Structure formats: C-alpha cells, structure tokens
Amino acid sequence: FGMTVNAPADDIPWPEDPAKRWQDWMMRIKNQVSKMTATWQIKKLGEKENDNLKSLRQFKNEWANELIAYIDVRWDQLNNGER
Image (cartoon, rainbow, N blue to C red):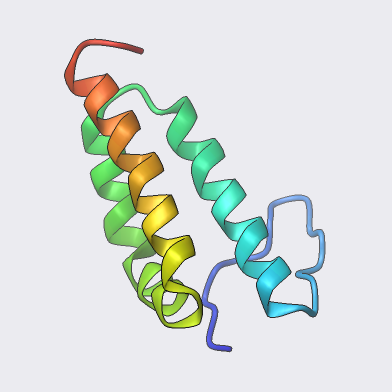
C-alpha cells in the first residue's frame, strides 16, 4: 500500500482497509487545510504530502481530485482575504 503518513498523534491505529485508511488521511488533510490562515501553509503541506497524494491518485483518482478541489477552494479563500 506504501502509505507514508504517520499515525495520528493520539496513536489511533490505521484501519486495515486501504479505502478507510485513505479516507481518514483525506479527512485529516481537509481538517488541517480548513484551519490554515495563509497560502504558504497550504503550499508547505502540499510539498510534505506530495508523495501521499500521488499514491492516493493511483489508488482512487476521483478522491485525489476531490481533495485537490477542496484545497483549491481554501487557497482561493485565503487569496481573497478570507480567514
């Protein structure tokens, strides 16, 4: 499966099901992005998670597109002065 994401800080084990594991990762990324207040934070997260995003794209391309769309909306909000 090749997922390199660290387990959550509270040490909840990753689900065995790869689809569930990816959904959990996507929710964590969306949660982080929703709390960001500057575009540089999103860019830095993107650099850090790039390999995972590539792996997600191979696992289920629609999910990767959905996540990118979510991040793009937040990027635009921050670019337009929303916090």
